[in-house]
Length: 132
Image 1 (cartoon, helix red, strand yellow):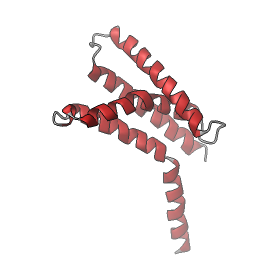
Image 2 (tube, rainbow, N blue to C red):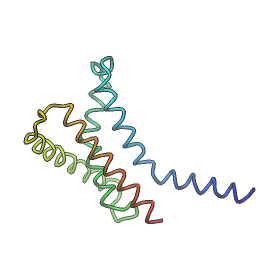
Image 3 (tube, rainbow, N blue to C red):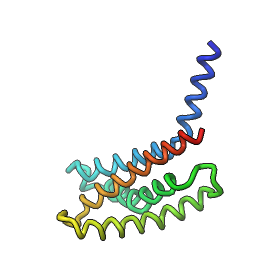
Image 4 (cartoon, rainbow, N blue to C red):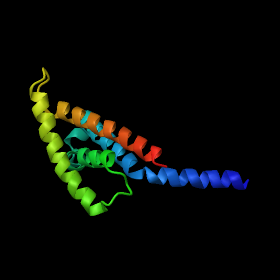
């Protein structure tokens, strides 16, 4: 019985270790849903989620993939770097989309940034799991 209790507590600690990435994936999914659903696309929720997603999510995903959580970066440093990397990611994605047959519009930019966020979150999950 104590082994099972210890295993449950250990799993709870491991799940807590990935909470920021889970929230980032949830923000990305909610942003996609708020753009795709016609009822939500005319509300303030779309604007709030869109600003949070565009200015925060791609950069934080890149920071999480590049730096381990136990690195010398504190939370304020991570947020500042993620803001700058988000702006850079938007510029690079927009520049790249302008050379593809796809039009440069909000939906294509949202989907490409979402792909970047999901890819970087997978890398961050793997790096955190491997560092145990």
